[in-house]
Image (cartoon, rainbow, N blue to C red; front, side, top):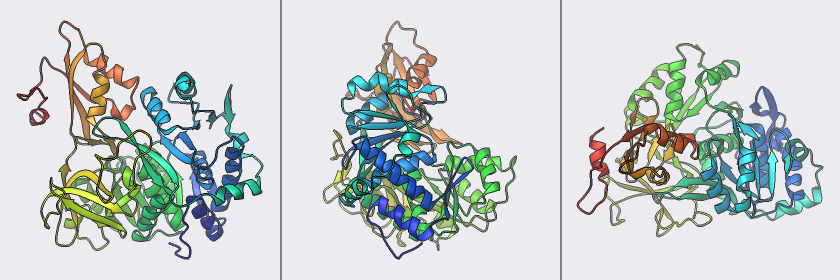
Length: 520
């Protein structure tokens, strides 16, 4: 990692990388190679195009796309002029679009016109009457009535004077990205990631993993999550390495990419890594170039970690722990960790991250005592945007409540012991049952619903939702599934639906989820 300059803003970090690494390949997308200089130059054109649309510092721009070069070019361009990106997913549907675009006050949205048979532009047009701030739709893959063509935007002549003036107003504490994460109340909350928080955690991770210009990474972690944009893109940007962009994860596709462009770093959630190992049986690839494997997004089990060590004996294996509210990594496995420490702990806080483990009264516990993990410093954000309330997530003094239970051993290694919240992690996606429950409860035939996470050998956990129909109704599992799949992101759609005549209740009339968990 080049330590000569530590830029304070993301646009400056890209410019610095272009000056240092010049024609070296920064990204590979669909077989095309893009140098740091090319990306930096294109960024100026797109930034000028955004300014011409009337966007300026403090505005928000939503992006709906895959891991593709256009996404990154637009992200860098927005960051360069102080426009914050609202990171959305191609899996989102009308419920998420309405909430996120409305709450963020996005003035523009860049999107694929269609993906996997779903028409995003049509959806946005239908919602537009309820989104008074939304003024522009930018089409990544073509224009249409009322849609700004991507090629036109990307080829906007650079107004150097206007661009320089816009850049001069951007500072490290400006909002750079908004990532929505559902809270225990079920209301999606937009974590306010700044230039400072994103670069701080990316810099700390880059230093920890010794990121260098010789590194190659096939990046399948989605850009609308910190695992993709911070732990992947920005960490590699600061190190000067190359990212090959994986539009949508398929194990065989990634292995084919690896055979053509041998990776030095492999990163993914446990589900991705499990599927890659399984597919190695049918798509043999020499992974002798790999020096480091990073697993994050959820707690990896001992079987997976042991298999990774066995299949990649020359590579170090590390856990990575972070949240949307921490902008990226907070904890990683140290280089000198033993195999047992790797399997039993998630690692040690990165430099700059302050950690506390507290009891129910917010008092620090002693070593080897389980309590709730709290963090501040490094990439921890100060708040949420829009109408979200921060009180449930932040303790006094700026400490982020993670909702995770853990203890620290005498070596300072953190051992997770479950989640205080009801959230479960399915294939690397954080899912809060209360959000899905609230939506299922809207079905006219539903009387009562309760959701829990249950173990799954591939995805880690999946959602099981117990539904009690209204008396006399003929509600079916298929109806509930269709109800959810039409309006919720696909990873939130229940994998298991159980129709019941009743649910276990407490004397005060609350559903006993503990009793449901005992049934699993």
